[in-house]
Image (cartoon, rainbow over all chains, first blue to last red; front, top):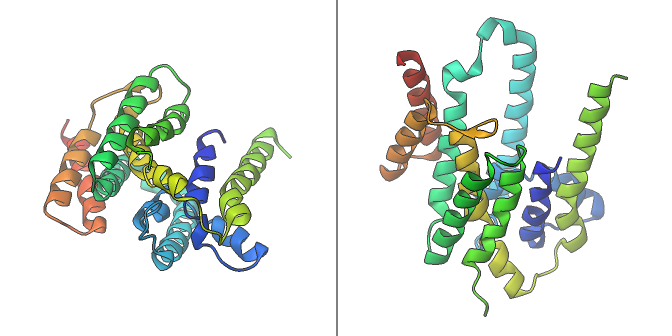
Length: 144
Length: 102
């Protein structure tokens, strides 16, 4: 739950792109996850609403289907880490962060986020390091 | 209803609210440029932390395990300008292979 509080600033960062009535915004907001947000260029001027909605729906379907398969066949297919699933997520986030490093400021923010995660992982409960890393956005922020 | 299900429902509902705050409250209106500047730096900060968490964290310790191979393969794929699905597949394959070998 604490881990998911990061979705509030993430949601605000793309709030401009949401249109329509209350219920439609509420529904589309549920498609916000790290991957759909980052793939669509979240927080940048070039945020692509189509990519966001497409990725959000695709990820939701895949996640739900994957959960069902796991629940039904979990005993048969064995431990997912033997397929390298954890390494796949690490590689995905690496690719996404790579696509963000277009400026010195972004580089500073990424470095700060990584350092905060490294520093807090041994001492804080899971989820807190990720949440605290949002503070590193300040490192790349230049007052105008 | 068991305590586990109550927790699942509470966390799910809470997360839905957290996600909805931005789009429902701010939705459609432009944000001040200074705030947008700050928010555009959220992606690199958060994603870099997720790389550390997914790549090196094991509970509360930081470890070097088979996922390092996945990250290396993923980084190579990124540098070869591979599409994102290929980066993910490379990461999974290298991690699985390293786990099999060591």
